[in-house]
Length: 125
Image (cartoon, rainbow, N blue to C red; front, side, top):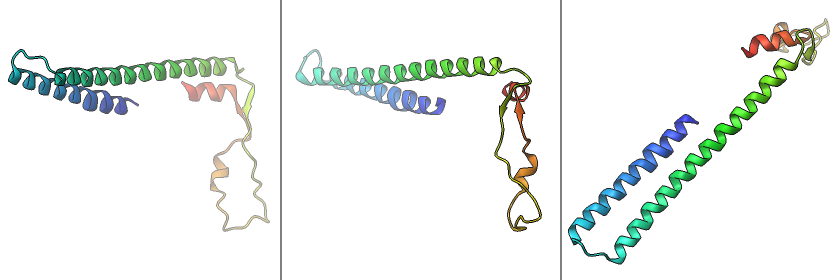
């Protein structure tokens, strides 16, 4: 998200705004004190860029507020789970004599039968 904000706000918006202002100043200097319809079009173009920039900033603010709200809800839920309370039971895979030897069952060895609240709190830190 930070990379997107950097590219959108800095590289696209800021550099485009800088280019528009520079072109406006150059064309205005060439005309010397005469207001024409071209001036209003250029000013509208700059205002459009400002509106787009403010829209991106508002999107970033909403995204940040949503992230913090979700983070607080997750922290609250994690802290509400008791240390001895079971919060997850992975799917069980039985390995017996009838299991096909070609079947990849290596992942089963790392699974535990239950995960408790203390495990979740330890992993969440």
